[in-house]
Structures are given as C-alpha cells and as structure tokens.
Length: 387
Image 1: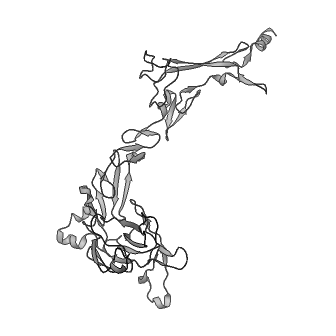
Image 2 (image 1 turned 180 degrees about the vertical axis):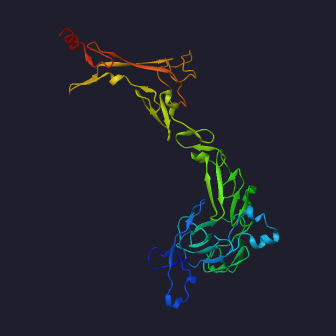
Image 3 (image 1 turned 60 degrees about the horizontal axis):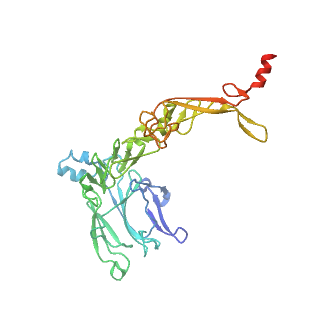
C-alpha cells in the first residue's frame, strides 16, 4: 500500500506498507500484521516521490535478468525469460509501477505539481531490492497531461492509462478522456535509445564501457570503473580513482590533495619543498626545523631566544636563512638568473613543486648574547669563566 490522504499534517502521504497475505490461513480470525517499508532512492537521479492520493499503480511479475543472460536465449525463449520469471528467479519479487495522482498545489513553476496539484510523474518500485526509481520519459514528444483518479493496467511490457481528472487547460472541462500507452520494461523502455551508447532494460540504461550517466551521454573519465547490479538496477561507480569528480566532458576535477588526469597522484603544496612528506588529504608533515603549508619555512634554533621583561619583548638575535642555490622558485633549477625578479630568497606562490635545495638557518646574536640560539649572555659567560 502506498500514499493516500489524511486530515492531519502532512495530509498527502508517501509511505509504503506491506502485508504478506499468504502467511495467514484465516485472516478474519488471525488478523493481518502490517510492516512499514522504507524504499531506498536509486542514484542517479536519487529523488523520492512526493506524497499523493488518487494515483494509479500496477504490479508486474517480472524482474530483469540482464542483457548478458538474455543473449543466451533464442527469441522464443527470451519472450518468456526476459526480463525475468516471477517465482523462478530466486530474488525476483516483481515491480510496482506508480503514475500520476494529486498533491498540494505549488507556486514554484519548477515544481512537478505547479500550479493545480496534478502529477504526471512515473515511478518504479523494485520489490526485489526495495529501491524506488523515477522513470524519465521523453517530454519532447506528446505525453499524457497530468491527472488523478485515472485507470491504469499493465499489458505485456506496457502500461495503459485512461481518463481521470486534470487541469482545465490540459484536459477538456478538467475531465481527461484520452488513452495513453508507455513501455515500462524491456529493451524499448528508455526515453531515448541510451544515446546509442548503451542497452535499455526496465527504463534504465546499461552503458557501454566508455560512457555513463542516466542516458549514457556522459564520457567516462580516466581510471573510472562502473558496474551495474541487475538485481537492484543500481550503478556502482568509482570515478577518477575515487579522488575526484567526473565532468560530463570526460575530464576529472580532482579533490584537494590529488592531481593527474585521473586524480591518482598524491599531491601536496610545493611537493613539501623537499623538507617533508606528503600525507593523505594533501597536507605536509614537515621535517624538524621546517614549517608552513609547503614546509618551505625554516626556523632558527629556539627562534634565537625570545626575551620578555613584562613590558617589552624581542629576540636576542636575528635568524638568517641561506639557500643553496638561492631559490625563489621561479627557475626550474632553483638558480638565480638575470630574469629573476628577486634575489631568490623566497619561493613564488602557487608552485606545484618547489625545487629541492639546501637550506640553513643561523642565529646572528645581538652584541650582548652568544650561543647557537643566542640564549647565553656574554657577561654571564665571562663571569663563569673567571670564577
């Protein structure tokens, strides 16, 4: 049982309930136990149908065995085998087709019930796998006006709808007296011929190796793998090595921390400048004495000792950084050239890899301090030496 209307919010229902009547020898005496069903939305497109009432639904005792298995049968056998045999395929529990109905009128022109509350969407509930899917039929050719309270039956692979109530501008006098047929299963049930790059089964396209998308009209990106699960009518795709987004033109948009045409190369800012290791997520784990997002920054011992007398503070020496060769990152070899805009003491921003180079950081102490980190006062040192 699906949908309906109630006088309490949310008014228009989209819940599913199941009662297995064959389990009860005497329903009058035993009663019937209802079970709530929560269908999973199929992706793509991944939407879920709106609450409604006065819709129509039919049950089909067929399940897709898949194009590969169908090819093993002769045309006469395929007529009885494709897309499945209810009761003979262990996982086959049939399909439920839902079309149209009425719901709350919508102001938004993009809403499927705008403006009168009538619906014309087509849904397929796969009872085998508890998956709900919207069937996207072609709207560039004539199709039924939206309606509710109509009749619908299933004949072979096609649903046939008749009558119902509709909007006055779509059905004469708001009463629909037309008859429509639509193929919901079999190889001709897709709104387009899968863009000539796939095979159609139960309204869904099984794409060829180099294509993907609901209509097989998107190019597959490098290092992308998709498999189609016949039982659930679900695609399982790993795109761009699992580290990026596959664009419709067949190129990868890599996640942060990855690069390459297939997003398979771990990448950190500046390649960690040769002074750290690149970790998952694109962050650098810098060597001791180095820091910054790309490990380019180098620190002097103890930061040349900071002093603080409660009023003022400062360092007891200056940190002098020397790079060999002098490097600003503008040259591939990290060497100074006449074209260099700076004396190459800092790297340029946005570099893929900062060229490897030697670097040192030394404290040049103020007049009254000494030591590697300028932490020793010269006067104290003289006193200790003469003691």
